[in-house]
Length: 142
Image 1 (spheres, rainbow, N blue to C red):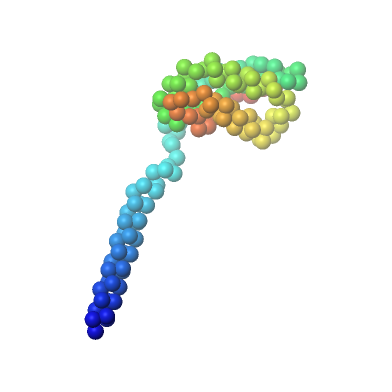
Image 2: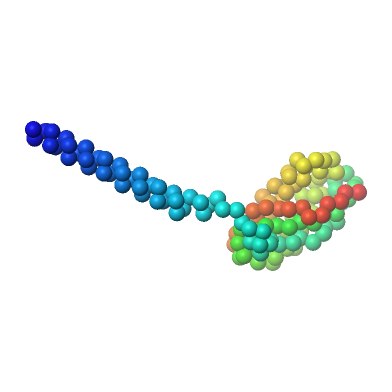
């Protein structure tokens, strides 16, 4: 009889602990789970973006390119830093473009590869935040 009481008490305690754990998990997921996946609004993107004016430079195959970008940063501090580093960012863009040929830009893949490469190289410079997206706003090859 004593063993049955002890077993019943242990079972009740284990069920109570399990219920408390499940409730705590649901509460934590409810209040923290959605904030990380929230997409920024168009206004937030504009507020944290930097325009890179049109750059004209030679490509590796003797042709030339005229291109402009918009860089989306992760914060207002990062935007201010990117604005101050504009000359360094333009230098990175010119260096990357000078190694490419016109055929490297064929289709979506070529432009996506350039955007990813620029984002990676520019983020090596950044100290106050990072570039989350690079948009091509103007693009001409001759």
